[in-house]
Structure formats: C-alpha cells, structure tokens
Length: 112
Length: 112
Image (cartoon, rainbow over all chains, first blue to last red; front, side):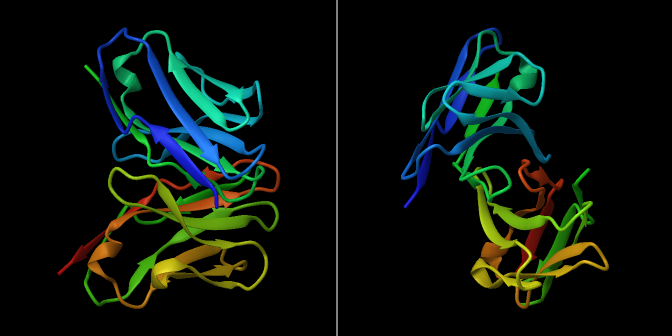
C-alpha cells in the first residue's frame, strides 16, 4: 500500500532563517505531488505541484520554492523565512491530476 | 471555473443526533466531488468520493453524501454523531485533468 511521510512534525524558526521541509511517498511510481499551506482557521492554499522529476509549477508567488530531486521526494524550501510563512504545511500525492489526493500528517511551522 | 461553497463555517450537534454538512458546487460539466475530514494537527483523510456512478455515495465512519445535479449540491450526512466525529470537513471539486478546489471548511463540534 502507499504511504506518505512528512517531517518534521513541528518546527520553530527565527525570521530570516532558511527552511527545508521534506516529503516522501512509498508504494507508487511517478505520483503527482503537491504542497499546500493552511493558515490558522482557514482553508488550503495550493503552493506547488509536480507531475514529474524536476517539473514544478507554482501557484502563488512568494519567497518559497519547491524541488523534486527524485521521483517520490518533494522538498519545500525558503532562503529567508518571513513571519507570514507561519502555518500548517501539507504534502499530498495523487495518481494523476483530478484523482483523489492523499495527505501526509503535515508540518506545523512557527516563525518567531 | 469550478468551485465549491460550504454553506456553514461551524456546526454544533449533540452526540447521537444527525449531522448535515452542506456543500454546493459550480462546474460547467459533471465533476468529481470529494469530502475530506481533518482532525486537529493532522492531514486530510478522504471520507468519500463521487465520480459519476451512483448518486448516493457511502464513505467511511458511517458518512454518506448525495449528489444532486439539479441542485448542484453534495451534502454530507451521518445519522448519528459520535464524539470522534468532531473535526474540520472539506468539500472538494475536481475538474477533469485539473487540480482540486477546496471549500473553506466546516468545523463540526459534537456535544456530549
């Protein structure tokens, strides 16, 4: 069966520090991968999606970036965090676009 | 464009009473529709999905939803609420070959 892992579960970072969140999927090949942000009490905002290695589409301009160095690995990064980057970050995968997405347990990011 | 509207941001029910979470969708053709549940500090879990087969869809944990094209609705119901049902619920529309559109969410509170 397929599983998705995100880490870390929680992270506290100072303003201006770099960020690296990692997501890996097991049990499937060539998945579509997604990064979402969920601000407190709000819905999900799609940040990035990827249909293959090295292929990244950005939905929202911001100081975040994403990379997909391997088929089942998706990384969310920032060179300098802002206070507004605080939130709950979720990684998800699907067989293809339009199919149900399956989510990891998320990373709670707090910026001080 | 495809979108969903969740008509209630917060619903409170007593344990053992029925649950109704309302969702209206907008789509130029028959979409796929989903309901997800999110418990605090967790990822989203797929409850059920509609993909143009039976209009009454049964999901996990006793939930079901009915697709009504004439009303462009996909309401989620459960005959008897349990304390463990307290969570955030998201209605999602998925156009063919495009990514999901999430509703703003409905927070369900279950009183003992």
